[in-house]
Picture 1 (cartoon, rainbow, N blue to C red):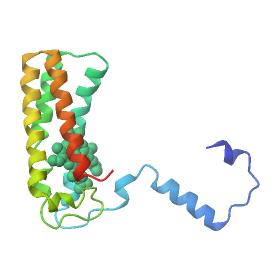
Picture 2 (picture 1 turned 135 degrees about the horizontal axis):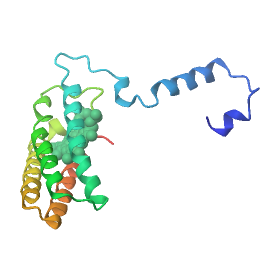
Picture 3 (picture 1 turned 60 degrees about the horizontal axis):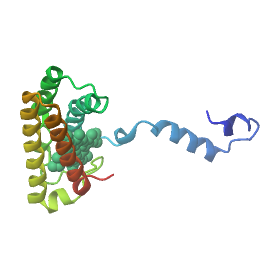
Length: 162
Ligand code: HEC
């Protein structure tokens, strides 16, 4: 509770303020789940879940590298876990699937060749990371991880809302 509220205990809350405060509380932390994907097959929900699986596999590798705790033998199954998830989102980008709660930009459907190119760059980068990981060469692993990270960022820049 911020100080602001503690020192104004007798300030009467108008109904409007109370509603606003309640709404802010309800939606804080809910994020995208505030809008449900109710369409048949729930493509937006499925591709978002698939991206969450990707980031869950991606992030622990970044933690090891950033904290200078690279362990070649631990890294191999992590890179394999990411590779196993890399195909998850794409089948769920069908035609007419740009609607809330999607955070994709319209560019996905307007520039399909570029989107496909960005997807292929990402796939290739996961292969390169896997190869570097199996070589157990830390510098090569770090470079491959960074290249992979760039493929996420460059696709998001054009195809995902911030
Ligand atoms: C070829 C394009 C592309 C690549 C490559 C890509 N993403 Fe995304 N990502 C998207 C799009 C488009 C969305 C928005 C999907 C939607 O909301 O409909 C998204 C959404 C996400 C989300 C949000 C999911 C949610 O719950 O809303 C995360 C997290 C994410 N991506 C992580 C990553 C990571 C990590 C990488 C790289 C390892 C990556 N993405 C690579 C296009 C891409």
